[in-house]
Length: 541
Image 1 (cartoon, rainbow, N blue to C red):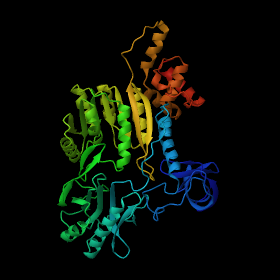
Image 2: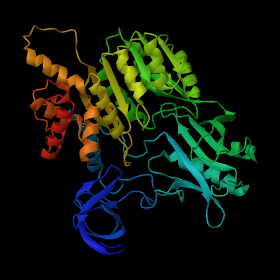
Image 3: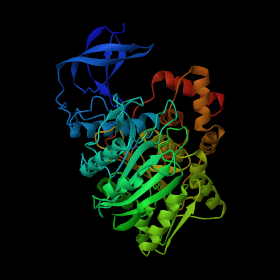
Image 4: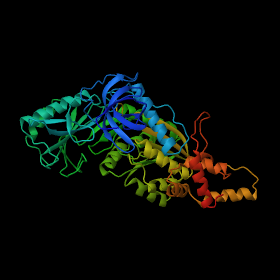
């Protein structure tokens, strides 16, 4: 296979980055903006040892899932990934992303339930961040970065954003160009305007306009404020100072130029205040659906103590505060905690407290203080939970853990660790919160194995020996031994299957599916032999 040559190929699968994949001469080739079932002519643009990248030269026979993109800049912009396929096909792929992560990466046999689709697939976002740049003729433009670059594709009316956002952007660009406001140039680290950040409270209609700049004041600032006030929805204009050499959009300092410091919205019946630095779900209708699912899984009776880790502005915990005895939220962003406390106060919620701290450190401190929640809700960032957080959660011994995750891979990893430490993965459900993009949320219910139900059994001495064998090596030690000696990666599920064959007693959560018709992958012979060797090495058989 050579670069720039053209080959016929059929797209047979999809990666979680949104690239179609097929095979040429046995080599995997990744092609963006394709659909499963497409028969294409592909031009090879990069060849590596084990795979290659290509672009569509022509489509010989389109997939039944293919549709014409609704966005004029879709092929250039790096925001969306699935404008060229039907929403039904997108949901199928996202379900598979989650299922594959939990079975292959997590070694978890629980089969996910049907994906919950977003109530709307366009115009669903209540927040947008637009980078600013210069056109070839020196005019200020804004839009979105092209994929894997910082090259701005001009666009003020994105189909994922409210129509009002585009109108506000046009006014800001007109002001910037009339008064020749210098935009920030990354390569030179010079200029003033960096981003326009817009946020909307959908239930209230309130809009916040936040301009990110390198200084604390804008030239011709009053002229801009007067123009923005033609929009009755705009209730807050904020200047965020960010003069650092960084890809992070917002700096730590916010200055209110006009109107209120925050805007408000209503989510699951709770009125919430939002600052530029507050975390808030970008799909409000989807978030209400997601939170209802979390509440269903928590199955609260009114007597529980609820711990909400990575709580943001407190929205999910406050939405359930009326159904528990006490709620404690933990978040590291001080502004978000301030918002959460005000949210509790203005909703007359008196059984909620909020702690500003890193989730891992807070979990450890609470555990050391003897805090014992009945239910933990955890909504970590994309990188997932730290091992300290997971271990502290386990030591607090809640009856249930409900995990919300925007990254199926790290969710599967964290659930595997919790499973190894005594929690069953009872239920998994994908939730689409970000239509037309590759992102998908996942909700997982984990329950602590019951230790207060006892039955009388007869044990033989050899059975006692086998039970003791389990304590001679952990799953991680077995995995490390197999990888170091054989170069093979083995899952917890495979180890459990081999241990069971050898008569080593396993707890049910390692290898028993929760569904009668679930398909559980079986350990390949070469990996079974390697695991057997590890069990002998650790004197477990």
